[in-house]
Image 1 (cartoon, one colour):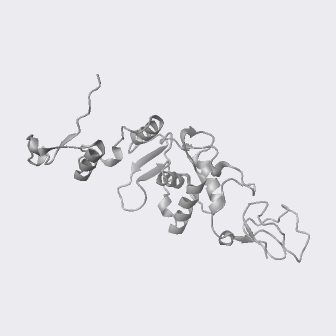
Image 2 (image 1 turned 120 degrees about the vertical axis):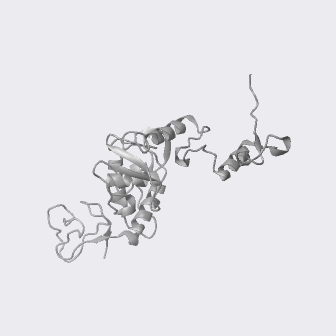
Length: 250
């Protein structure tokens, strides 16, 4: 038999001296009742907000949410995730073996660039994508943003952007993202992931060196190890065929 939920609450909590008298009771909807207890600070009944698991979360999202928090602050086999109790960085700190480099170790401009790029290149999904791991994904990000970070720092970036791992205690994480996300799709220039937004000239960082016509980034000629035939005119390639960096065309 279904029993209607009782959403009565106390005007003055019993713990603060309130009574069970009728004039100390009020009827509330579920949302208002939750908001009042949140403002009082007793919504989680002594638990930290980070350990709260919403019962109303749908099946797949709830399993993903619970699995992550079940492993939180526990020593993992190859990786450990802890709550960040400091004032700098996101909500979590990741430790992957001897890799203790953090996303916040990057320059603020680099952090902003990486967060912005991920926003346009990853689409959340209800199931795990096993074909791509954090280690490979960080290389795609590096190719597009020219920002290098370790596997550990990339994991913190993913958590900061709201992407939870399927198994937090393993070396290379997999995530709940779609395989059709732009990050994994080959673009018009033959590389994975969308290029950075904004003025393309802002992201030119290499050029053909006069005379030898070598790429200033990787040091190779446009045709591999052979020399560029035209001594007076630079190669007309917009990207280096060897390392993929965008070139300044004079």
